[in-house]
Structure formats: structure tokens, C-alpha cells
Image (cartoon, rainbow, N blue to C red; front, side, top):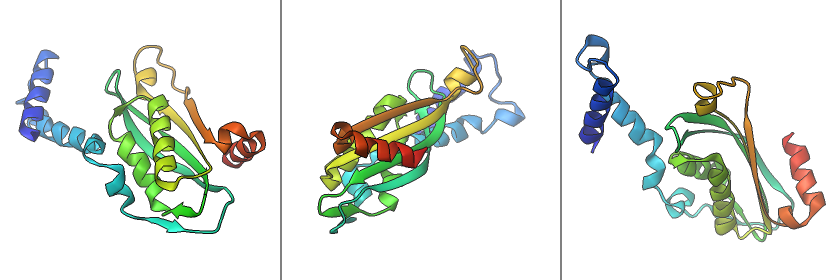
Amino acid sequence: MTDEIAQHYRQIMQHLGENPDREGLKDTPQRAAKAMQFLTAGYHQTLEEIVNGAVFESQTDEMVLVKDIELYSICEHHLLPFIGKCHVAYLPRGKVLGLSKFARITDMFARRLQIQENLTLQIAEAVQEVTDARGVAVVIEAQHLCMMMRGVEKQNSSMSSSVMLGAFRNNQPTRQEFLTLIS
């Protein structure tokens, strides 16, 4: 599979007017193919594998918040990166999720060709599914190279997206507490 992808990169470089056999580019198609496979590894992961049983009984019923989870994804419209951070909160209902699993869930969905709005929803629904929480909130703040490097070329722009499920959607004080904690 890597060799096939590398051949396509080679052809793209040729169509752009480059010589893929010149010294600086000789191994670039292979490196680019390996990089793209890494950046899209989320297609080969499942939520069950990622969580790996790390859901534990707990009496806590107060908000659990994980802030500033770094994320890197690729915009499905231009195949350019978007880079940002994700904040995830949930209200446990008898069980909690292992801390590292929030980053792993974020990475699994981010490592797919993606738009930020869908990524936000996928993370929220996954946390809801594995925890059966009373509510889940996810906010992603990211900068999109497709807007910074091409098109309108706005270097200081960023995008925020949010998904609120359960108590975060239906209870304004709970939503406000979350938004205050992440700002």
C-alpha cells in the first residue's frame, strides 16, 4: 500500500512540474506516503481498541474536565492540516474513563480526513458511548492552514466548534461552568 501511495505522490510532483528524481526529492514520495499513512491511522482504529477496558466504577458525579488536548488533523476539503486543542468534559454516572483515553479518542478521530465540526461531534458521541455519562461537552479551537496558506490567507484566524450533549445541552449552569473552566 505504501508503494502505491508513493507512486501517486511521484505523479503529483511530476504534474506540478517537479523532477522527483532530483537529489532533494528522490525519497520524498515514499516519505510522504508514510507520513500520510500515519496522519490517517485513525481509519484503522476502533473505539473499543482505544478504550481497552479503561472504564472504572466511581461514585463521583461532578464534572470531569480534560483541557488542552493537542490535536492535528487534515481538512478533507484541501488536504491541509488544522492544528488546535480540544477540551472534553463529562458528568459521570457511576463510571469514569481512564485519563489518557480522552487524548487517544481525540487522536483516533483527528487522524482521518476530517472537518472540525464533525470531529467535535465524533469525540463527544464516543465519550458518551463509553461512559454513559449524564452529559458530555467538547470544544475544539483550531487554526486551519487551508485558510491561512491559500484562499483568504488570514494568519490570525481560528475556529471554535462545540458539541453539548445531555446535561451540558439542557442545563445552562452546567454549560456555563464548563465554558468558564476552559476560558
